[in-house]
Amino acid sequence: SKFLNDKWMIKNGFLNDVQEHKPWWWNIKVQKLNLSAPLILLPEVSCQKAIEILQEKGYDQAPVVAESGLILGMVTLSNTLTSVLAGNAQFSDPVTKVIYEQFSKIGLEDSLGKLSCILENDHFAIVVHKQMQFNGNGSSFMKQMVFGVVTAMDLLTFVSK
Image (cartoon, rainbow, N blue to C red):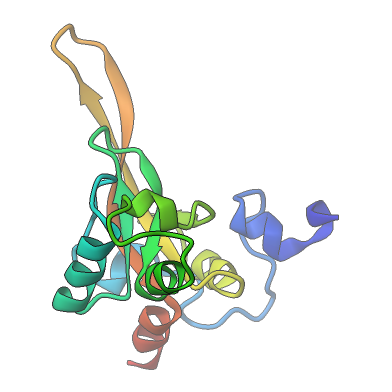
């Protein structure tokens, strides 16, 4: 059962850490990675435009975020190209047709140890930051902002320095 899997429990926030001999970087916060600002695509961007933007800017993937701030998923260059070439999507289709809706989120205050557990199964994690927003009538709500996308290479680069 996944409830007996320590890595699943850490990834989903039910356990802090279970390693007795943690590496030196295990408890360092994700915010120390110095991630660059992410490239974000809106859901109406076409597959062709997404491919052009990703190639031009030198990115492999980008979060797709609605105007409201809701994170819809992740688009990758390889998945978009594969879907179009296989006929599962057209160049003119919105990028939402080829997004990965299964993705992991991690906060800036979470540990690199938790990130490491996520990256054992996922190719990337979306780094989010929650902030309180108020509207005109004074009511408030929490909004998640995409702070970055982190990969195993980002973690490895940090650890090796």
